[in-house]
Amino acid sequence: PDWIRKGRGKDMNLDHIWSKTETLDYVSQDNFPADFQPGVRYSYSNTNYTILGLIIEAVTGNGVMTEIRKRLFQPLHINNTFLESFEEIPGEYVHNYHYLTPQFRNNAGVHEDFPEICSYLFESTAANLSPEWVAGGMVSTASDLVRWAQTLRTGELLGPSMQKEFFTYYPPEEPNDSQMKYMQGIFRLEDFYNGKDIIGHSGGTLGFSAMMFWVEDTDIVIVSLANVGSMHSGLSRSPVWLFYQEVLVPAV
Image 1 (cartoon, rainbow, N blue to C red):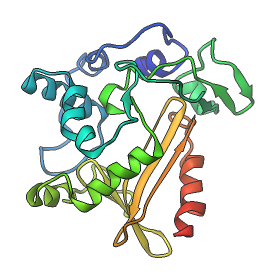
Image 2 (cartoon, one colour):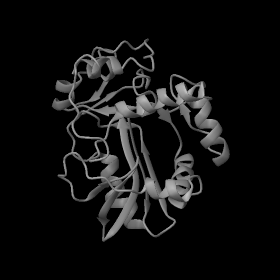
Image 3 (cartoon, rainbow, N blue to C red):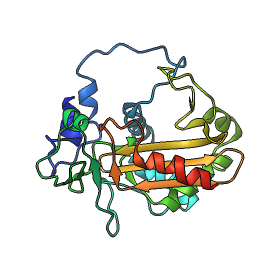
């Protein structure tokens, strides 16, 4: 798709900071029919997170990060998480890389200024995360994410009714993965390892991969961050996912 090549691939303008609404231009060009009635199923959507950020700003009259910091980060002492391209990040953060596969070349293409490190990897440090905005453009640390996951797990931040809604299960749009149960912004992976369920979230963007889950019925949170991405590469399980499943969770 055109926006993937412009936002993450060969047609990127490396000096351009995408506006908050710019990605929405690509989904508003056609009159797409609804996939299903609201409340019936669940479909993961970055677009909806972008719209949610705009709603927060419209309702409060403040920037979305002002509200996130006031309501979430400051009370929880989450001090090393920033919205890249829209906030100043103190110090530096790591160089990042992405898996180079035939599928990635076909889906996104490789920008001419991204050096190919080897036959299966290129460096994407020159890119920015502005196309993701609040749908995935934050940079963080493992310790901040552990704190965030513990808060979600215990219900420290939410009241009882909202915590109950948070864990409400919705059938996915395409129920082809019986292991994964979708909830409100998180999901449960059943029998992830040796009969253990884990709850949390995984994600990735150009140059980065992350997993943040807790083992159900324990107070154990495991966070794994990697400066290599696999988005649009066609890999069914990213290396950070495999490391999480085969090394980290079995160690619990």
